[in-house]
Image (cartoon, rainbow, N blue to C red):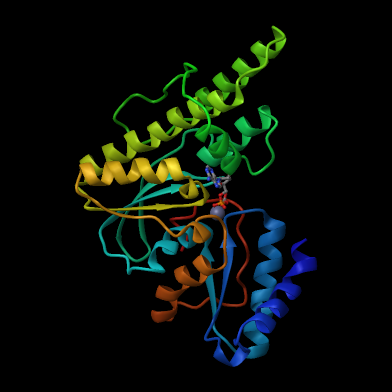
Length: 285
Ligand code: KG4
Ligand code: ZN
């Protein structure tokens, strides 16, 4: 699909905007982490554009993209604490400066977005599950008892116990011939899942004394999460930034935003750039 669409997307860009190749200063591309096939198409396409039009090439880490989505409206100030919550990641990161990522904690098992998607699947809701679970949760009450994991002061996360509890509950009810109340279960799941994010972020604020907090990644589009984070930020007098809804889930603008500090420092990639699927992300810049 990347192969089929990438040139069409470029054509669309030039036909729907005033942009021409002359207005473009550099070509930024996501090179890690992710599925190799899609990354490879992007990287080769970007290298070709860079070579043909003689524009510098900039390699961007996908997660740096999510983080720098917060730089689109207001310039990031450091040090700051970043909570990255997406389909593949759940991480608390201390940033001392541009591109200085110090991972304080991460999920020990599933990422939060992945668990939203799996819970949606067992409830027969379409992919991506996050927005659907959110809609169902808005109409339900959190009256199912679900386990709250990792009740220590470490900054790691764990969501697999919660995921298994939801899946087992649904299966057990179905075996008994009764259907689960999807609205209430969605609300119960969301309450417990987000509570863990809030609790760990609070610990990180207390440990680091950080006065700035940014939220990044697809799950930051969740309205309940946004509201709870606002409460936390108010309580601890922390400056909170969450991207506009359209810049929360995967988008190209955030990749340009993350490329900008590299462009200013003239940190350009060479044509031997290759995509990397795995995710030593914050160590390979
Ligand atoms: O950042 P993203 O677009 O792609 C990755 O890099 O993974 O995040 C996608 C994830 C999916 O798991 C999706 O279910 C979740 O973000 N997501 C949400 C919401 N919107 C997207 N999760 C909870 N509530 C939402 N409103
Ligand atoms: Zn993403």
